[in-house]
Amino acid sequence: MASVSLRGIKKQYDGNSVIKGIDLDIGDGEFVVFVGPSGCGKSTLLRIIAGLEDISEGTLEIGGRVANDIEPARRGIAMVFQSYALYPHMSVAENMGFALKLAKVPKSEIDERVGRAAAILQIEHLLDRKPKALSGGQRQRVAIGRAIVRKPEVFLFDEPLSNLDAALRGQTRVELARLHRELKSTMIYVTHDQVEAMTLGQKIVVLNGGRIEQVGTPFDLYERPANRFVAGFLGSPRMNFFEASLAGPAGRSAGVQLAGGARVQVAADVARARSGDRVTLGVRPEHLQLVRPGQGDGIGATVALVEYLGDISPVYAQVEGTGEMVAVKSDADTAPPAPGSRVELVFPATRAFLFDADGQVFAPGWTESTAEALARVP
Image 1 (cartoon, rainbow, N blue to C red):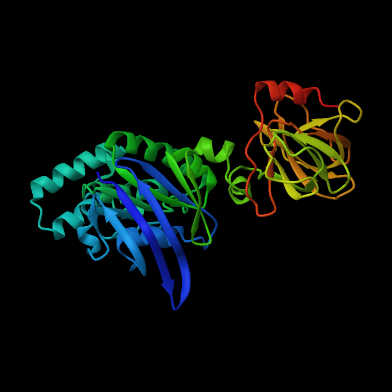
Image 2: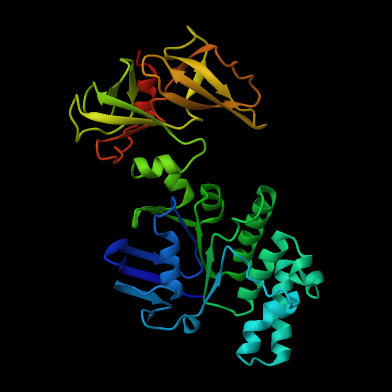
């Protein structure tokens, strides 16, 4: 096991900056996930740690050693790629032990390491099979086992579940989490899938345009996003955003006027802003409420689409006056409104987010007493 430290890491290709100054500390034994949209630099950053990409500027340390000029094979890392890359003519056992064989490790030790890794991954019964006789999930476990037998200080995973179907992805996520608990190794995992990031990562690094937007636990990033990008990237359906302006006192609570003229109250500390400033109101689908017309002090909308997913039913509605489409998570125990029906959207004052013109979030302004006071706002 080893810690990983990145200081001022930059990467350029032909003068084009891809990684634009990354500072990050990954603790010994942590499971860290790099997540972000395509082209954000997450795979490039992982390849830099692996030694597969040169560093244009900055310092990389693995286990307290500066690793900038250390060859990949001597960094104490093992990488699992999206492609399984198994040798088709070799058995599972031979695939898993091949790197050790090249390193001239005694056969008895190879057999011991392969057997232990197979037991951890529950593939002992597959050791004599060839890759063509395995399912996609089994092949991926063999690829992970090939990394385990090397006893690396750091495991690197580059979107290893992308080739699996939905059911296998869910099962393999559970296995990876169990594997981390058992091995207690440092693991760095790259994905564009926010569900993988939220379910696997002890710490999530959200990347965008070669920069880190925010680092934190899944709970912190979901409940306390630093900016509009993070808030919109994590969550499915994504957070609803409404262009608006401040229309009330600039304190720990503010009135917000939406583009269509409707006004809502939000518990946010907007002391650094002024009335009339342009802001963006963000509300997650599970926090918006759908009520029948006249049953609440809400904003009118018309239901456009209802998706029945079993446990929830996302409802997509078009806001009257602005034409904006919003998503609302309807409880599975409640029959969702039919497409074409008119509804009202009720905004929760204490669960909404406000972002300034630069996309930075205003700090929450509510306390228990504030929440009680806002509940009485007409």
